[in-house]
Amino acid sequence: MKLFTTGCMKFDGNTFLILDQTQLPHQENWLKCENVSQLVEIIQKLAIRGAPAIGIAASVLLGILAEKGLTKEQLLDAADTLRAARPTAVNLMNNIDQMKRVIIDSDDSSYITKEAETLLDEDIQLCGSMADHGASIIHPGEKLLTHCNTGGLATAGIGTALGVITRAHEQKKDIFVWVDETRPLLQGGRLTAWECVNRGVPHKIICDNMAAMLMAKGQVDRIFVGSDRIAANGDFANKIGTYSLAVLANYHKVPFYVVAPKTTVDPECSSGDLIPIEQRSSDEIKGVSGSFGSCQWAPNESDTFNPAFDVTPAELVTAWILDTGVFTKQDLPKQSWWLG
Image (cartoon, rainbow, N blue to C red; front, side, top):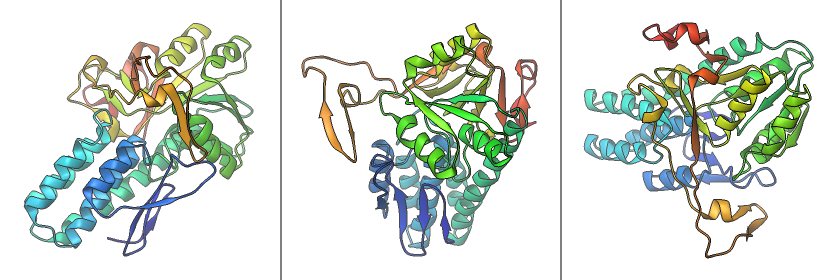
């Protein structure tokens, strides 16, 4: 496996390391990942998250394990275990299925490793294309809003929605970003804000329930969000709270964009009704944890409802910004619209 370093993972020739995002922004700890059970745990506790990033991490580990001499049967078992690590993010399934095809067809580990490297390089290129397409929409001086984290921590490249925003900043468009804190895990307030600080992007963190007031006051020109799975009809799943943001944007006539690579489109999923939604631990709602430790504010006796994602219908989307181009509702009836 070649040496590489991205915003959330790296391989130094001997060790595969993953940045523990649960400890950001105040601690930058890198976790050693040597086997499947370790990566599954890292994925499920959200030490690595973001649909493209977890797909790449799983592919890279399979490439490393192939180099270490695991048999074809062992690699296929590992692939199936990794594929089931999180149910909503289709990039993970797509990447694993591609790796499995190579594992089945080849008796040479170098081909398996090469496929992992190809998927890594492809994601970096896809991010760059999305950033270019999306930044071309943004006008100088605009105030943007984003939800969750969709930058280099969620991909192998510059990012999806935050990648678009970052590229506009690089183009000196004098943008400003409202960063939804993104409850319950604060992935906006912790991770997106951290990336904005590191890249020098002007921003302010807001509570999720402040977005409507800003829109009403004309303080939001455009909204950019990412996606973990896009159905063939344009419906999409993203971090919980995205749907309500889309409804607010529709009411206030604020353009609302989804940014994702074509690998996030699931052509086998006809609508958002068929997207599986991951339910997570009640601990994430009853309290909070991070580099500072953990605390609980809710009664032990209280039950919770904690879906990780919600589904936004296509009718609320202004356009889908993919690596293959910018698509509007008029493009959706076309077969394989996401391919450009």
